[in-house]
Length: 129
Image 1 (cartoon, rainbow, N blue to C red):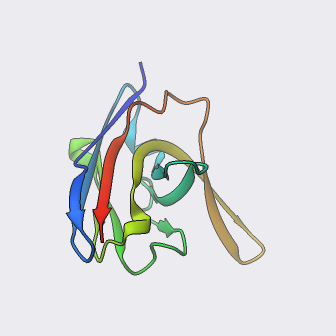
Image 2: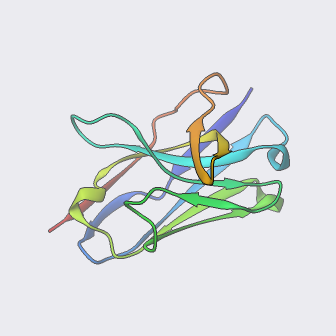
Image 3: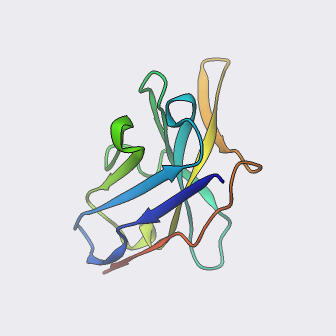
């Protein structure tokens, strides 16, 4: 059974840092890209970052570029999201999911693999002002 379990959320003041972890099981970790997605209250879920476990390439949304860093430990089947300079608008439930990287016309983006495991409960990040 495909499982991705996110953890590490919490309450932090604006400007602070948190590191999220995503432990994966039930599939060949090296064969997939793993991403972080978030959903703020009253908003749609959005992509935050994605890393290819095949070649290590990384992708970020414009809203977190330069502040968040995604990394992967293939030996531990774990993906991390280091979040620095947190802002109140980063407040959301963060989820990890396998993702599909799309490169076209000089641009790149990523989407979740919706039919690959469930979203799980996610981990709540609250940034106070």
